[in-house]
Image 1 (cartoon, rainbow, N blue to C red):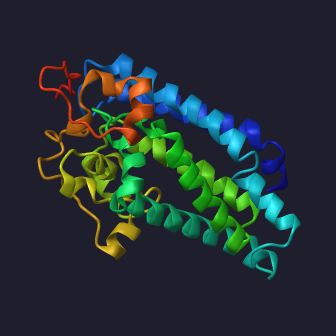
Image 2 (image 1 turned 90 degrees about the vertical axis):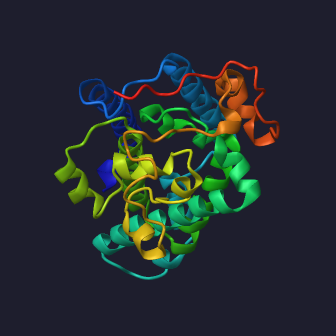
Length: 281
């Protein structure tokens, strides 16, 4: 565990860029749907906003994630910094607690109007692929970072456990947003435990009944427990429409448009040129 933390930056960079390369290649080889005509603009906007987001968060949260866990440990904050427990138990608790916290914060992002304003930047993407996994408004990242740091501080989660949890979340997040065709038997088997592309694709449907479901990031059982699990989108997987109608214009899909979405109230003008949606293969 100590070796893992010693080389944390290198490990995270390897996993982060490695999963991007892997998922993007799979999207080329075994796509679930055909790529939309706005692919280039989407990728520029989606990765553009994550650069802005990362710089903004670094200023506000210079110590986050496993670094924050080390800080809390040094001050004896939280449950596991007060009691002795085997490393395997703290790892299990960290995985479950952080994923449950993520589920809860995600649920609130959909059901608290103010939070939905900042979360709709993620849902306004007119397609769903690996780049959607990084499409978050900086204001949402502030909110999620506060929840993360609070959970770590209260439970006193070990740095190594937090780091492993973050690695898994990164891998699953890119994979579940991926435009990947997974064989049905594999999809069903994996879907019993973890969030798969088909499971999360439903969450990005423009249909509100689909959007307000499947909030999980790592594990599907939170949605099953709380009654928010949906197996099939209303329109079917092949015909699901992504995005939000009020943000379908081209101007809303630029980097500036993404940053402005939490503050926008207008509906799109009927004469404006919409961005082409995904082409069903």
